[in-house]
Image: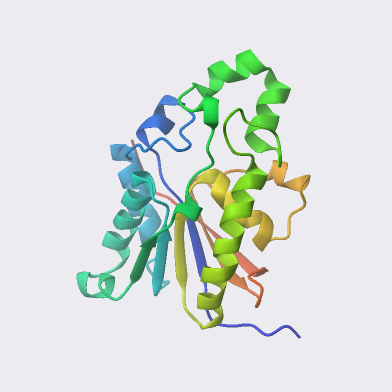
Length: 217
């Protein structure tokens, strides 16, 4: 039987940003949360109040930093927050949408056509002019995960990651052993918190999904 450990991996997508609300491809553009996004972040914190964690990681962008801060403010006291090791890492940054950054998604769907639009958003290695494919995101985030996060989990630490939709999809592909083809069917992590236990390689043993509830515009 495979050896298990006590560390839990908690993954949260950043909540609604100003560009999300406008339907714009955000990628590497650094935009803040909306007031609703702050409320969503606090609600995410409430749904994991029972899960303590020793380490918290977010990307370099303000929308994940604000989401993480809001979560910590809700689920930890000031004294507890001082004990959490927090890092902001470029490996957790969102996919670079290149020439599509700032474009309205639904206008682009009309311009590109539905099939190409879906491939662009969901496929494993669909090219993006001057940007990143999901495969390229995987190649930067998974080495970080296996070198930094997995040893922390093996040591029994609970770890919180706040990142972006495509970066989380790339992590999910590795953690859940999803094929290059099937990853196109994996949705963004909207309105949910995912809690994993993993094996010694960082692959999923158990998965729990918690719904972020009680948020009104």
